[in-house]
Length: 287
Image (cartoon, rainbow, N blue to C red):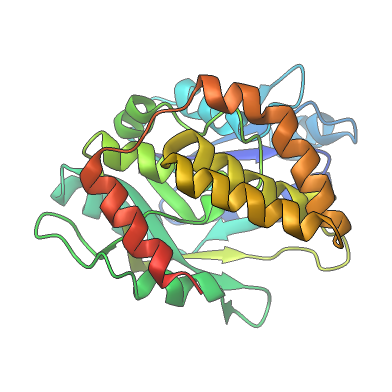
């Protein structure tokens, strides 16, 4: 499928990446695949050259986190780009359906897919949250409007992604999706959950990503400082500080928040009023 490419950002997970690539290269859509290597030291690049010589590789000199995806989007020329992680892939036919939805809906900027987890194909809990979004449908968009998604189960219109600036550099990794959803919507692009587009995610329970829980809590607070009104930012910071008194993960998240806060304040840009109202509606629906 020449109109759709896949970007995979990876670092030091060669074995998992190989399994993902075997599935993606077998897709009937035959999308262009670009692996963006975040300065791996485990032989990832040698494996790619040996076992997947037809897969494009963009080797970064240092770990750029989620910004590796932006480097990949810039390197591709396909109008639509799907994201996979080194432990996720797409259901056969899902990308063809996504391309048809983008073709039929010119304002559509991002599709959030339905995610099936592990060999048992369990529903990711986020599926139900997105499907029940109180923002509802829009007449010129498929699915239901959302302001969140799972990066490894999303497809973007390349021009929309670049127009919004891609993933934010302050956040690096862990809950980085919300700011991109905000920025797409602020530029007028539709962000929707389309459950007929299906992705698979097989995280390794024996090898959790170090520091991810703290990064997600840190980025929830930084997202408020980047885009939300001051009372929301202060409230989320205060809640994290209160938790830090007894929770080591919260303490780590708070330290990392203060380290990144000056950069967040320099990049602060409030949501337009209609979008802030939508964000508050979603705040009220958060579990």
